[in-house]
Amino acid sequence: MKKKLLNWLLPVLTIVTFTQCKKNNTYKLELIQIAKVMSVDAMRALPVGPTKATQTRKTGKIYAYNDLLFINEPNKGIHIYNNVNPSQPVNLAFLQIPGNVDLAISNNILYADSYVDLLAFDISNITNIKQVKRLNDVFKQFYISGNGVQKYVVTYKDTLINKETYYNKDMAMYASSSATNSSSGQGGSMARFTLMNQYLYTVGQADLSLFDVRTVSNPTFVKTINLAWGVETIFPYENKLFIGTNNGMHIFNATDASNPVKLSTYSHVIACDPVVVQGKYAYVTLRTGNFCRQAVNQLEVVDIEDPTQPKQVAVFPMKNPHGLSVSGNNLFLCEGTFGLKSFNITDKNAIGNNLLQHLDNIKSFDVIAGPKSLIVTGEDGVYQFNYSNASKLTQLSKIKVQTSLPTSIFN
Image (tube, rainbow, N blue to C red):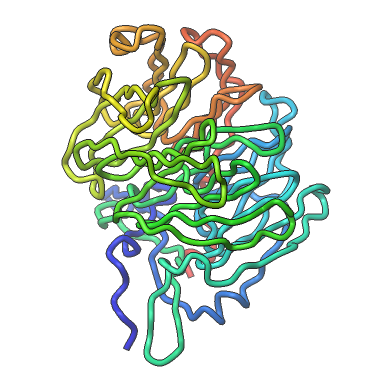
């Protein structure tokens, strides 16, 4: 008998909602993904690689690299857009990667998870993407054991259900790190993958894994560092790693990139917790939700000038804060179903009083303050804004989520 699925793998992920009429009754249907079990051998036999451009049915993480925009479709793969002109992004291709949730890019090599494996792709020619490496069994937290030597992973099947069926979108894992350098890209704050000093760092539910990518096309697994359960995000800044968990923020010194050392932990109430850093301050959002416990909804400012003794500076109540990004004196904060907000953060003790703009018509989850545009993932698509004036964000474009059901869904 296969062991029961881990609780955090059970939730189904909402894709899109449809209204259907039957006689005099109107009801809503949702296209969701329901977890099912597949052997690892069968998983590795699934097709991987570039296909023709398609429209996404759900937005996951986002990643900007040079003039390209990468949009993850959870557990399906990555949509690739030419983003030379953020007002008119062009859909170039879809990189099919079963079980993909996270990505990071360095020197034209894209690293992506595929269930329990790490894949590397050469994207130097975007019209001829090639897989150059596969590391098996490096994300073992996703395994479900069976009798004997057979192992299983969780896959997902598209299914139509009534609106009332239970699901939990808080377990969706978003984005890659928003820190950037000349050779790597830029992602959102819900990070589980990040690059720094020629190492790829990934976090699981209870660990930090290291990969040597000094030879970018040949990533090598180094080791795993055990952490307490509840790890959610990772953010690199000035040779340090800031790891968000559901009860605090760990700070690691990664001066020796192959051997990060824990400096301290900043503790907070149990809640979902992305973090970004600028200068001597970290900005942390805490929110309630099904898997975030019934905690608090707030933005915390933390003084990290002495990373061995992080100190709370200020706390500001929010509605339901998710991802965030900092650029100059401005902070952009996703409020989930409550929209997108921009703040002036010059006075760390008065951020809550310095709201610059609130766009309440977007269900926003994560954000990148990129070099060309502010990129925001929403429930219905990916938005780009001109943010040269943080008090007057101007929408440049929107990459829409597919809103029609494939015929096969009804069969």
